[in-house]
Length: 210
Image (cartoon, rainbow, N blue to C red; front, side, top):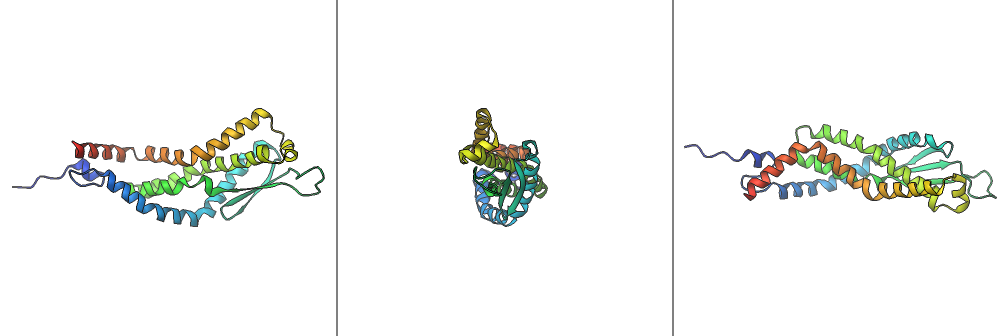
């Protein structure tokens, strides 16, 4: 007499029959996180080069406020047309922004994607990283605007020409780009690209608990 076959829902999500696959999935994610962060840190300069190009495009509506965007490793430096003060000579104000502060969701997305072990995981990983780059550029540019419009010396901020209402919008964009977007955007993107995996995980967990 043939032995009964294991439940397909449990094995499909990477678990064993009669046991929820969720703890194992969480463990695999935690094991992949250090590797993902190490690779992310190594390739960060290349990613920030693309972010710098996106910031160049975003800066176009702001006229000559940004003369150019330079890069040093993972740091982007915005060279502006603003003067340090009334008595300044040829010097201009430059603002440096660490792009890693807005890209730390990428290794989290990578660890989750690899741990899910979907057939197209490497393609999903590449597409996901590319899709997250505009969100990183948003956070970096919002940080720059916050520096020149809000936290800069009044002599510098007045040259930027932002109104009180515009400064409020910049403050909101900075908070959103700093506190919410770096973690929420990768999480939403992962959920959208792994709906079938999550359905199998839920079915397997329900089967194991039932």
